[in-house]
Image (tube, rainbow over the protein chains, first blue to last red):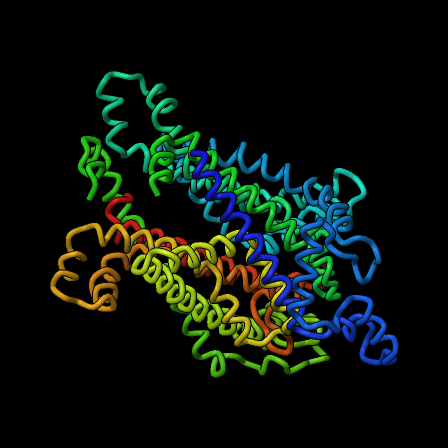
Length: 309
Length: 290
């Protein structure tokens, strides 16, 4: 188990390095940030001073090494536009994003999993069909369409809720609804199929044959086994808590990380984009790592299988 | 066929299954019909559309749907929504088709390579897959597109990376387990080259799973492209795509909602049809999942 954790840690670190390299290469190779930021009409002196200041005159490998060294000391550079530390800027946006993504995640789990499990236990019932239909709609309607339709209904036509901004909790309702509907659908569908697959396994038949009550079969044999794939999906959802709301934040002018990504990419604010990519990748990697640990706890078979790898 | 499929409960559910089989086709027929219509529109967009997509009719700006000559209305510049919709369907479908095939080929290829060579090749492929999984695709695309500018080719290539890691993982896993089953070993023993083993023997055996993954990725790519275009970073004007239409229509949400609703309905119906069709195909092709 310890070995397994170590291997995962090394892989997580390698992934992080890859993300860092990717960010660095894409951003540096695609154009001259000095001209983009100062404009094509900027005087040559200003451009030279800018390039000197941000080390843009050095060869690429030197910039890269300097960048790695900087990152290792947790110094992510300064936003070229706002002159504040990039990491600080990113961190300052995270609470706003979490304020809509965490409630959405709770709704996904609290509604999606029970709905999926119920549907699996009552296959072909009206409830099952309802869950399937709703879940298919839930994840085929893109978030920007859903968001705009919700705005059209609740903000424009009915006038009940504001269509954008972040002044009160009422402003958060539509973004949270938009974020959670699709996720509830995916969660329900996933839990349903995981549960159905488990219910078809021989050990369920064995459990029933030895005379366990249906309740015990479901709670002690089916659910723990169905939990493994569900946790995978959950890990993915936890990992995208920070970055998963870019479109929704843009629709509702919600001042979170997603909007920061869009604006800083548009402004080519290198330091901010790089730290955003790293923070987002970190959150995904940590979530994946936790999922891996959870696998080990949930399923002893995987533990030994993975250790043997 | 698993034991489960033969289990004691099967006869009781058979009634439901056969009823489902009889019931499903109507819905599946509708889905297939819709998709066929979309494909035809995509192919014959030039012949079908009543107006060129950039033709402005400033006298009839924001005409409501049902106006003679502009059956789906016009947008803020008086351009015919129906004509633009047809072109958008073509653009979005071309991107999605190209990208789905690209990512399936790349992913499956890398997965097979990992299964064949193991060792560092496998580790490298898996590290790349980890990298892809660690960076949300939308974020990665935003970075790449905003910095390299947008062109159709770049967009297809970029979308072609969508989901490759899933094919790679599936293909690797299936190929490894296939090598452990007798048939792959047998053809290797007979002296077949690896390329023959993988393409002629293993690929057909794992194809159904891969096809099901494709039906899952396809709508996701449509949604991803529309999302990017919606944010203004995908397909650029004067060219148009479904997401791009929604994105621009958004500004006229209160006065002319049809500009945004027409492409939205097409997106939803198309992704819905493919998902339903994919589910049905999976039921047909994969006997282990009922």
